[in-house]
Length: 299
Image (cartoon, rainbow, N blue to C red):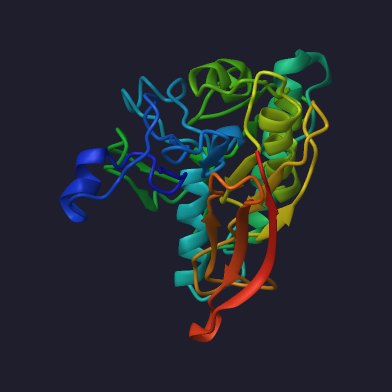
């Protein structure tokens, strides 16, 4: 299933590298959800569909990069990778401060919130380069130009004045359309979506909102990834039935403060009425398999 780090990789790309692999993809490029054959009450997807900075964005930058779906999270990741390549340096430049445009209405308020998110990202991943340097080379996802930090972060000519963007201009006004395009059943307000881009708890909440609280959903077991935070819980649904939510954590080797190399195993129930679907969350650090948590239910 596609995740936010391989949005633009096509089914043909994957098939050429791993012939015969099973792929679960939506009709919407960059997304995929999966229910195992014979187990329609299980839903598995990456989880980036509900994230403001990581969900496919086919509306922004279309004059700059026709057909692109790359969200701003792609550029966050580029800066994060550069931060590590530069061996975790001190910042080589200072981000100009902007202030809320009180008279600018809802759109300007949301763009100010978006600036706060970028300020957090730049603080988290300082780089040695000046922010006007065109250090981000693209030729990917429809982009062909070279871009700077200044191209990504909202700017303001005078305190309290108009806040604007170079890349992703108007992104704060398009979240509703993006959710519709990305087949999100229950929409989240834009302000909440922007505020929670770094929140694993918001991803957990989206599972309950989209699958368990939602009376149009029949899913009882949902597995997400995306947050790098392994977790298992047993919420109840709208009909007061037990459900299971698992976040499969991360397969990476370095995950500060958290476990790594996590995975989930599902053992389906049989026709025997006493049989239950068993879910186990594992960790494989140092090539040792550790059962972190498990739960079961019958549907």
